[in-house]
Image (tube, rainbow, N blue to C red):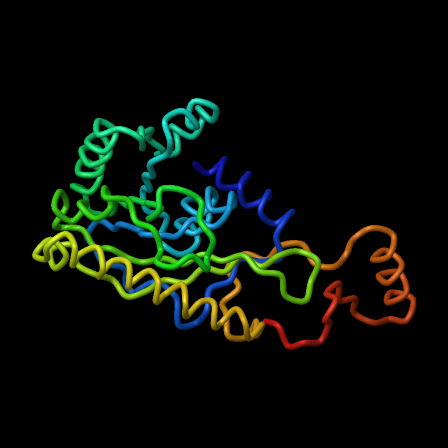
Length: 252
């Protein structure tokens, strides 16, 4: 786990500007002792690094499990060592396997199940946010768990590389969800995730880095000969070199 966390973190820093969380969107402190269901949207390939980077950085490094399309998992066999388990999203048997495995995972306090609500890629602007039936039924097989919405978005601000933004919503006890009918439960879960996504979008529009906690900082500047020239010129003048395009913008 430590090896792959280091690999993923390095890959992220090479390609992204930063991983940021708005101050209003930090996870609960302290985290619930109950097993957690992280219910997240799925806008990008980069989401695959979320269970490793976000859990290690913000969720006390909990033991994380996450479902993945069984056929796709066969191409990334090493991920089975990281808590990824295969499911067939196109069959009833696959749904049963998902619920059975999830129930086993969520029996243990400290365990964390990371699930993409839609079960597929979807744009952050798609409304209503799609939900798979399996997630709606999770509360029935694991009433001891706590659901925690998580919104993800990737945006370009003022620098060369994109910003990865993440925000947590309000925790919901699975027992509360289990007491509802499935139709009402689906709407409660959908609203919890959509409202978190909408609020994150509003924060992203501000481009105000000071309103976010920088969890992981990536490479800055444009790189190459252009950046080398400016670094050298700053050294000759005895000035501190700032690689950012918007140097001096007050970013933490």
